Image (cartoon, rainbow, N blue to C red; front, top):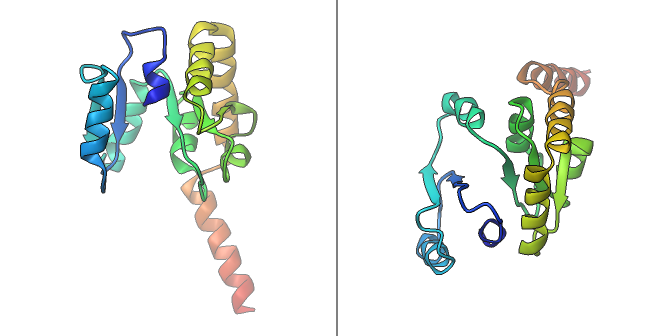
Length: 157
């Protein structure tokens, strides 16, 4: 959120999805302190059938995670043609590869600078869209199920 507050373009809206388990009061206070109350939307839980329509409305997808086991949300964003800004932590560099724009999760200025860089450079933005679409192609639920079946067959042998 601090990185978003540093962006030059004050017309952008930050959409936060998912259920917030704890810290909502502190998060609301931070948003108010940063003067973002009119520019932040909380959606709460998003049903799976609404995720791709939501991505269709997105300009960027930011996934500022400190440790990620797989990274399904950035993969879904890339498959939707949305450039991703992700951290250089956990599995995200492996999942996103060249399609990701990487940031330090502890540095709001770095996050803002990388977001701004994508937004200001249409050619690079389009390159990231293309790279993301290509990177996401090998991943599918069908592929995941086939790999799981293969593993189960190996275990049962």
